[in-house]
Image (cartoon, rainbow, N blue to C red; front, side, top):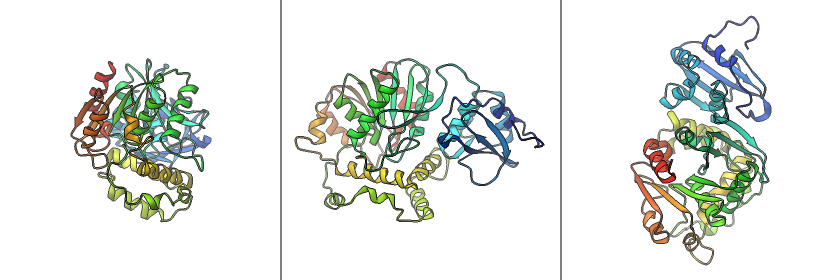
Length: 388
């Protein structure tokens, strides 16, 4: 509803009228999502768990959605239009993807157990934030270092017609619990995946992981193959085979130093947007917003430092080393490699083939995030592997 006396905003009012608070978990119980009509006025949708109201834009918003008036009208007339416009680039989301995309889901008027929904799930590993859609056999998606569940939104959209697809924020990231002093290593994250399955009442699931999330999926498969059935590993983080000259120094540095902010926000923002290709437009821009939003909090920064430190320090060899352990992975596995990946070079494929001769491999012309950079090819490979 709009505040009494305000001019109606047509299409935006229609969205507010069909807002369903059960679809989206609103962190803190209150949020402001700015709706921008390009060339026109800006409005704020004030969200709570039970309702929403439309107000003139004021102050800082948690998320910003902008589109032309014609696109907003199309979204209001077609309940699936919001997500369609977002994926097609006609609607831009900045700031919190959890709230921005969650608002689109909550105003879609789509009903039924398989609809897109954002939830905060209490587990033995703390509260874990998820986005999920679809029904059927479960597929749990695990993001990479600095990412969030939103990096798997295209996967949820692509596979939800035949699977129950659940993308999670790992502890320390996104909207999930961020415990101070947690180890934030592969074993810790794997326990959180199993804790989520427990809370959802799932005996088992297939897992898909990108980058660090791929390493977590591997750890789940090594820990309990009966629960981690099949693994889709998208440019997975793997233990370094070359020398790690900084290892002795990093072992002395405590990740809790991340509770302090060593650099001003504008400096961090500038550095990240220079490093990440396309960081000022489209999916990359929205992903960088999400990263900065969490990284610029003390707990989020400490979790990021701890996880990055563990990736760098993981032992490749020895009795407990990654590569000897990898040979014991019995789960059916699909590895998707990016030919232009500078973080996990495709040369790693040869070492995986030696350790896991039965694993399947797909090469794509992309970088480190196949599900975003080459979604059609990535999801076609996933469908073929998963039999959906």
